[in-house]
Image 1 (spheres, each protein chain N blue to C red):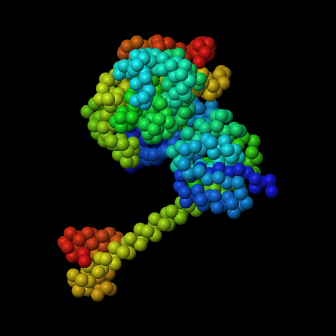
Image 2 (image 1 turned 45 degrees about the vertical axis):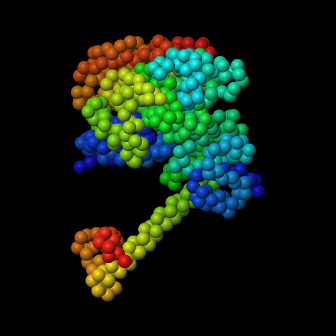
Image 3 (image 1 turned 90 degrees about the vertical axis):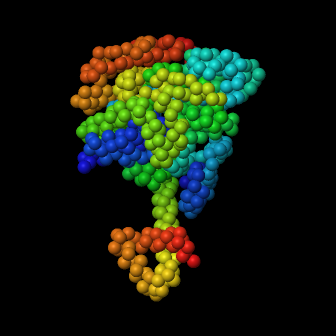
Length: 198
Length: 409
C-alpha cells in the first residue's frame, strides 16, 4: 500500500523511547523506519535514506543543528520543514507537550503525516508515564526496604514485636508530621552511626 | 502575594543573568510577579514553547523575534521585544592549531579584530594555495548575533564567509570539545563557552564582540505578542523587575554573588570562575595571557536594556545580506515594529529610568562615551563603533544593503 512506503527517520538519544516509537510505527505498517541515537554522521544517514518524515525529541540539544541541516539543500535532497498544520493548533500543542517534533519533506500531504505524528505523541506520552511509574515504583520499593530495616532495629534494640515496631514508627511519623519512610531513614542513619544497625 | 504568573524560557548562558537575578534576588516578587524560569536545551524549543504558550516571555537571540515575525522559523507566533537583556558578551575562539597559524601571520593576543582578521585571511589564502580543507567555524544558530558578527568580521577582513570558510551550527556546550577534537576550527559564542575552551587549554580567544561592534545587541526579552497586548500590567511589572536586576548586575560589588548564582545547576551549571572574565572584563585569552576589555558585557549602562529600532534594522540588513530574507518595504516594517521601545518607555518612565531621546540612532556614529539629552535621569551612550569604521544609518537602509552587496559579500 502506498501509504506504508514512507521513509521515516527517528532521531532520539533515548534508546528505549526510540525503540518504542519504532515498534509503534512498524505495528502501524511502516516498515521503512530508521532509528538514529547519535547525530554524528546523521547528514550521511539522511542523504542515504532520503526520509519523508523525521521525528525528533524536543529534549535533543541538537535540534538547532538539525533544523539548520534541513534548511540546507546540500544536506537533504528535498526541502524538509517542521510539520505545522496551522489549522490544527491542538495537534501542535499536543506534540510540544508530549516532547516530540516532526519534520516532513516539502509537498507531503498532511493526511499521510498526521497519523504518524499522532502515534508518536501517544508513544512519547506513554513513555513519559512509564518512566514516571518506574521512578515511583523504585522509590516505593526503597521505602519499603528502609521500613523493614527500621522495624528490625526497633525489634532488636527495644524488644518489640513486628506490629509494635511498625506502630511506633507510624505514631512517630504522625506526631512529627513526616512520612514513615523518612522516620525510618532517620532511624537507620542514627543506628548506623551508633553501631546498632546489624 | 503575586498578581502575575509569568513563565520564562532561557538558555544556560551568562547573559541569562538579568532574568535569573530578577527571580533570585526577589525583584520579580517585589513587583508582584511570580516568575518561573524554565531552562531549555535549544533555541528551537524556546521558539516552539513561546508559540504554544508554555512561555509568555523568553531569553531570546536578538534576531529571533524578527525572524519569527518574518516567517523564517518553522513554528512561530507574533513576537515582540520590549527590552534588551544587555549588550556584548560574545567572543570568537579558535583552536590552538589555528592560532599558531594566525600568529605566524601577525595575530597578537590583543583581541584586535583587524589584526586577527588580516592574519586569518593570510591563513585562508595559504591553506587555499596548499589545497587544504576549508576552515570550519561554528555558531549557535543561523538567526543569531554570533552568526552576523562573525560574518561581518570575516567579510570586512576580505574573507568570504560562504566561500572561503564553512560556517556550521553547534550547540554551545559542545563547542569546546569540538574544537579540541578538531571537528571545528573556531566558533563565535556567548560566555562562558569561550572561557570554557581557554580553561581546558583547547583554544584561544581571537577577538570579541565588544571589539567587532562596540555596544551591540545580543539577547532580548521576547514576548508573545498576543499575551503582551492582553497583559500590559504584567509585562510592565516584569520589565521593572528586569531593570532592577540589571542595576544589581551592573554593580561590581555583586559580581561574585552573580557568578555564584549563575554557576548553579539550575542555571548555567559551570564553575563560577568561568563567569568572572565576562563580568570583570579581564579576559583570559589563552596560555595565561589576560586582556582587559572595556564593556565586554554590559548589563545596564549605555542604555543596554533599551530595544533600539536601529539594532532591529541592522540585524534585518544582515538577514538580507546573507540571503535569509528578501529585502522589501514590508519586511523592513516588520523588522522595525518587532522591537518595542514604546512598551519599554511606558513601563520604565514612571520609575525615573534614563531614557534616550530617540528610538533609533546612527550606529557607529559615537566614537566615545557621550552624554545625551534624555527624558528622566542622565544618560551616556557609546562608543558604538564597528571596527572597520562603517556607519549604519537606519534611515538609509537601501543604501546600506546596496553597499554591502556591491562589496561582493
